[in-house]
Amino acid sequence: MSLIEVKSLKKMYKYRIKRSGIDKEKIINFIEEYLEGDSK
Image (cartoon, rainbow, N blue to C red; front, side, top):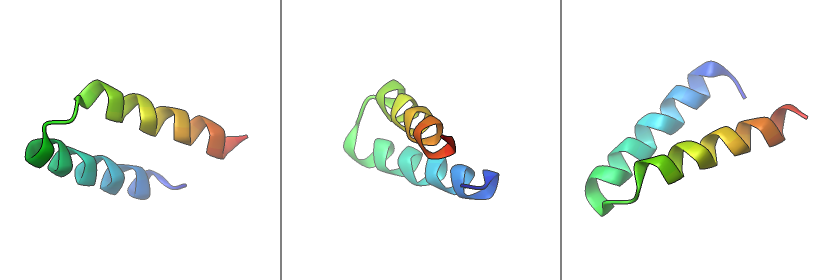
């Protein structure tokens, strides 16, 4: 995944968090875990 994709993912999740009230830390952790798994 490229940095641009990561940034757009984060924007998307921030938008979803605003609408649904999901814990932001969980989303960030999810993205970081996904990226670590993707880079292996």
